[in-house]
Image (cartoon, rainbow, N blue to C red; front, top):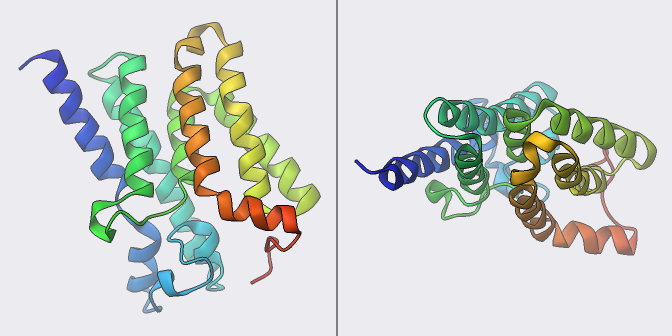
Length: 198
């Protein structure tokens, strides 16, 4: 087996890990209606929170983050850090475009955080701090995520040992922005739903 074969196998593994639709699975197990028929129709933790069940929303958030962390940590045991980054990206894309749900998944923020955490605790900490500050000030989950994700490539670039993955993280950030285009439009119009509101 060549090195490229190994990488492709791990990319597939990363995608399959990321494609586990935790929000949908957990709400179904709890006997709730299809989460895709509620609120934004998204399967992520923010939309799960609209069910009013904070425990399931938290479980969804943690699981979606762990998908990114797991993909990175498993890959790091066999591949270089740079190669492992691509496995993390595969998990990130798996969450957004899961084959099981006709490629209609979440917006990727939680899995994005997990991938970042697996690569650099400093980048993950920076994301978390910025998210908390923005969410506390403005109470918009989308705005907090967009602002925090924009800082991640900068943090990677400023660290000598992670400069080589700054560009990859920038691509992931662009994808996060792409998936939040509707949120950006609502923010611009001043009609975006705030945290705690349905």
